[in-house]
Image (cartoon, rainbow, N blue to C red):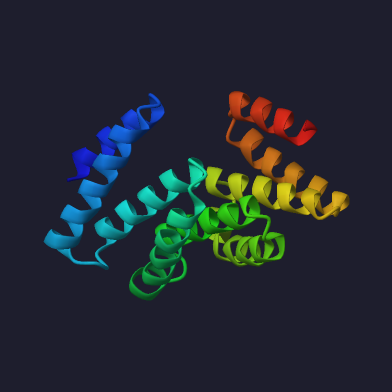
Length: 173
């Protein structure tokens, strides 16, 4: 079942979204049957499918999966588990894309507090970039610049020059 998720991710990266979706769904269904609804591996597959739908713009399908993942992860794995934080971040991005900016900031602020053990990770960098985008949409340009700069500093500390260039391009938009 884990191999199905890996293959689904490869199909997604190749733009073969119909095949990717089918495998993501089959992997999630198989894990639900074999491991139960709230097993960490099942929750990871649920998050993957929600993330997949979010990136395709299929927000109505993404939201219930991401909410369920975050709530179950929080209950089963705890507030500071990386899956809880990842699903909370995915939900914040979804809310930003839906134009629900205040909710996006609320989720992002909560995730930022919990991500402190991973303050210098790509997860925190992505979260800061999302906060920057939301603040920019709200006209809070000083806050947006601060968030972008925090995200860029984290990526620079990780010595990821390609990601820095991508962030600079996104900030300039």
